[in-house]
Image 1 (cartoon, rainbow, N blue to C red):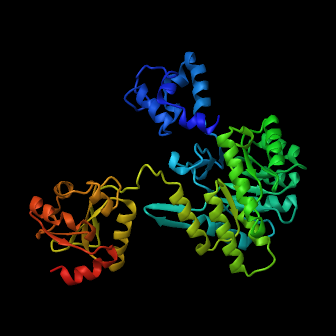
Image 2 (cartoon, one colour; image 1 turned 120 degrees about the vertical axis):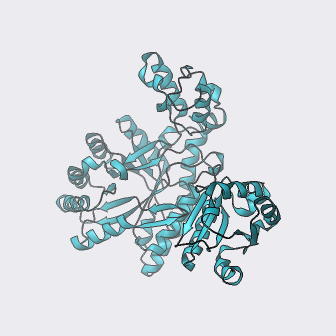
Length: 471
């Protein structure tokens, strides 16, 4: 199905015609028309419609709808349980058209020749990587086990050791089917990703993927014609969960790398090419194959390669460096790209307490845009201020935007003050508002009876402002 058919031409009426039209509300929506609209906008799953699943007369309609609503890029699942990872499942080529789903997964490599103690430390470091940004915990997703020994027994032992020390999904990396088979004997129940099938080993790799029910990567470096042929061959063999690696080439090969990723994704969306409609695997780890350069230089090269591939449609990355300074920018970039542009990130409005405030403590106000709130909260916590923070529902917009768009008004501030019952917490009636909301100060004061103090333009100025102005 081409992007044009699946996104632009598909309307709620097209979907509604195939629904049971019982308005049973079992899907959680008011009627079948509302459910159809949510299906088209990809805000609901077809499986929510119980009659489609449970009644035989709708079996054909279910198949038609499944085909109609499937994403141009197939979604595959790696791993099992809570730590499993979904890759692919993309509906659009450009984020502004709808939203990107299933953020790019990042795997860090280990080798089967690493001493046991070092291997365990590296695995645990990857597993424990965590950074909270705008209220969300950012983590790494997988372990890529590379067989540098080409020894089946050694690879099997390494895989077993890793499984004992983490629940992260695994990628088993070798071009030798015997090595992969040895790893699968230990890791089969955890549904690892097999890397990789080539023009020389595809038959054996396909048999392993089918026997163990695992997804498989097809690899043809800088040869899209061969890669497409491999994908078709694997599909004909019955392998459904496939990922594609067209090769990642640093330095002089960077242009070819980005072109290949772009052309493959464009073919899947614009031309409906099912043989290329699979998740894309990037390997920034190839930056470490360059002989020239220090370790820091190679880490930097890998980091910028990863950032380019995140932007250029990679669904999965295999990396080597576990340095925070190289990984953190990319996990934040990934989060920014994979947020829904039509739904601003927001926190729950209401009253937030910092430190141990008392009846004389300051009362501050801000918007419920996530970035605004967490920035303000961080500045308050860093300064060790005991205070109350009133968070007004601005529909996820920042202070200046919400004031300009009438999402932050004196009426909303008054309503939030009333709902939070802040007047029961403090004996004063002084409210500090953001400097960017200064134009509302008079209205808020008249409507609430509170004395309004116009605070700094930036929350970093809150500590000095309170020292000078709060009496």
